[in-house]
Image (cartoon, rainbow, N blue to C red; front, top):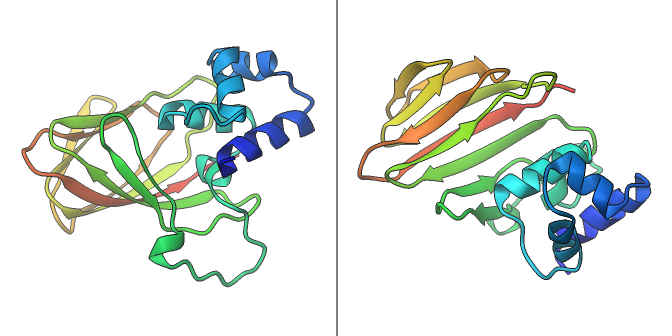
Length: 182
């Protein structure tokens, strides 16, 4: 059984939630929760993130074993890498601690793809820091477009709709630090 499936079931049961209650909160079907818990399917990044949020956890907390020490070495082999249906590849290069509200990711955004993040009223957005290491990344924040090339960085309050776009012909690589606000 995958770590995500085990963590999902444990957190759901510890929270006293039925599959139906969690499904409604995460805006997914009850059968999806059941299939993930029984390790029949792997959730998409979007579904996994909605489930994590519904359980009051970050996606990183759901994908990694929580560390308990203040010094953590993560070899590249120990860093979780996941790829979604659009072939967007994310590598979590930060350790995961219980209650830690910061994630550090390396992202590879294939040509002609994008990642849209819509702000939900009442939700906390947090902060994002971005550094481009390859290609040209467009970040659309509240209808304004910022074009970042290799070496450029951007900070923004993530409590708004925003989109990461690669309209070029080559893969864009960037690092992003996400600071979640409780």
